[in-house]
Image (cartoon, rainbow, N blue to C red; front, side, top):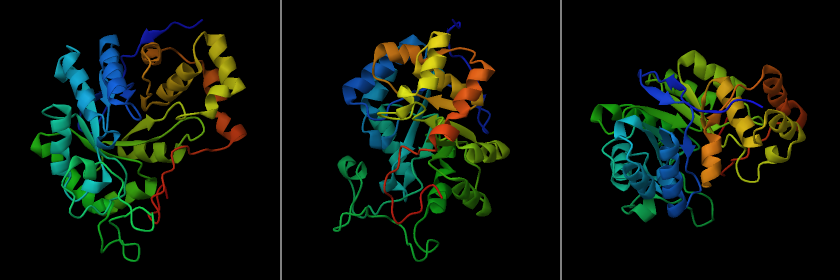
Length: 316
């Protein structure tokens, strides 16, 4: 059986700041679940909490941070800009900080490279929504015929890249950006994001994206590292065999596979025992690491988080 210890590893952003390599995700957590999970995580040793405006649980996440007793400067907190507020990210960040009850976050991300038409929106309920047109399609703030003429993620990033100067966030980055999206920022002469947070697990290893990010000094963060809800990975016989031989869970194998690849891993759980277990690290043997890495060749590549942003060409 392997020796399990709490994670202490960090990676360094292009700002020079350290970010804990293992954090707690809070997507799909109710207010009560988010509060309890974050509070228990911090008391168990976690120092990295990942949230987002659209998760609609920034309030309880922030309360758990304050109630934990852990000094604020010891916790790395991330939240994200939702698509309804791409034209005014500073105001959006101020609203997130108000909901969190914090003076600043450590990292602020553009959640998706997709802006929504939010003309006339003034309330949280409106901002934290997915606007739709009369035909049921999502109402994008984007000109398909002439993307450069309308609003686009480059214009959003041009505003976001300067937010650290306000003191409201220490670093900024993106999420769900493809290699082409990142190249578009560079071609426009804009600053390099500190982070790109993407879906990443053995069935979506994102090798090209990881290589590009490494070349440019962008830290990759893995959301849904366990494969999201109803993950096919938990029933895989190879993973179950590796877990059994090491005396760990399949989730722990998946998390430690990601950590061994060198990026930030953000598993989510609302169960206290799993929150604790997910924070345990061990040395995944090279032969087991290779078996996990080969799963995409035998099972096939599967992207599990595929929202419909049509006609915007997401992931291209």
